[in-house]
Image 1 (cartoon, rainbow, N blue to C red):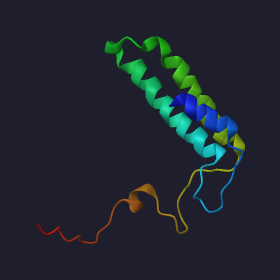
Image 2 (image 1 turned 45 degrees about the vertical axis):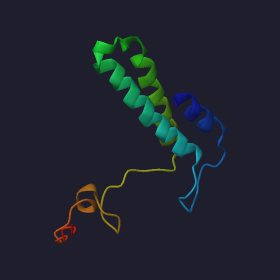
Image 3 (image 1 turned 120 degrees about the horizontal axis):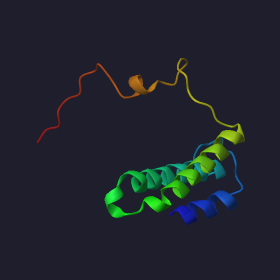
Length: 102
């Protein structure tokens, strides 16, 4: 999967999609970062599998992919306000939800 994401990040030329419906170069880099971070931390901390020797390579791949997204300058962290909800308000509600009928 990592090799496929590396290929996608290197070969997708679209860097922005105003419709937010297509995969861009930075979508591939973002997913590559997540997959490499997951694999790197799994190998580093699940020592019973004997895979610790590869962990740092995956973690460095995660850092490099995330840095590519950061360096693009096209993204920023949401800090609250306006019409986009924060993590807490996006996933919490005081409204009652009817239970499903069986």
